Amino acid sequence: MSTILVTGAAGYIGSHAVKRLLAAGKRVVGVDNLSRGHRPAIDRLASLAPDRFAFEHADVGDTKRMARILAEHRVTDLMHFAAYALVGESVEQPLLYYQNNTAATARLLEACDMAAAGTTLGSRSPGVRRVVFSSTCATYGEPDESRIPIEESCPQSPINPYGRSKLASEMLLKDWADARHRAGAPVALALLRYFNVCGSDSAGLLGEHHEPETHLIPVVLQVALGQRDKVKVFGTDYPTPDGTCLRDYIHVEDLVDAHAVVLDALDPASAAKDGAGVPRIYNLGTGKAASVREILEAARRVTGHPIPAVEVDRRPGDPPVLLANPLRIASDLGWKAATTSVDRMVETAWRWFKENPKGYAQT
Image: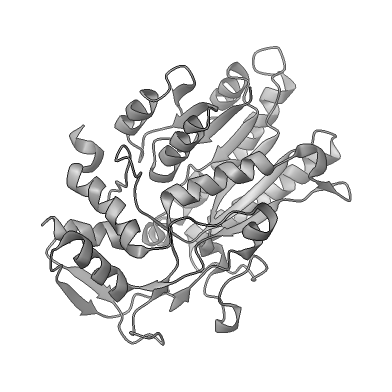
């Protein structure tokens, strides 16, 4: 049986990915330094399949420690989620983002090579042969209106350090995969660019908990719970039907399902082209957009609360529309998002927030 290492396993998306993989009968090793992840999420996951899930409290940037983990668990596949993802913070602390997102990825790949070479435990491990990387639509920056909905061929021109750190990581992974192929140790690589991830585990086991919380749906639901006074609507004069930004929302369960499907489709033996590693690149979204006002109305319907809002000026760097063209993954793998109803996405998030008003902090 293959063993999948999931970085950022205690985070929002990483924890849902672990649950999806365990449900499929996979053997999983979760890694997280818990700087922004949540130990209770790990404890909940461990209860699902204690014989197939192991957790390592470690930093992916610790090359020697990661090499030992990869070798000891005989890891064959990697899902790399661990990253910081606050745009504003990245502008204020760009070095933190390049260190934590890009440099740490380089050190993780070095650890993969060390484990495969047997320089850690004295004996060679099977080596990582399939890698799925958590990227972002932020690498596209502010696409021209003619490029929307956004295809994978859209030029990448990120406008903040977060997006640039992810783009740099993509380039790093491509170069590493290319070098592995040239060395006769092929690795199959996939780069998955997310749009707006939302919602929670439909069983209520896992959910979204960020400090600080900046995502629209959790902020709206915190107002419904009385934890905030009102929602700020940043800009009502955009060239959109109702004047507010349009975004492509994808449910977190669909997102991690796509990861599992892509991982299963990766084949190191056939991933080479002209002697170089060629990654699969997919946009992950629904291909449908919802405005800020539409999210507010959906939350009011779902929660039964009025959810007051106040209109304020635009935020710098907010594109009017971010919408995925998800046809490539549908064509290649037959995959498409199962949940396209914004109300349903909000419902799963609302269940989580009602049952866990303080997130994981209360467990």
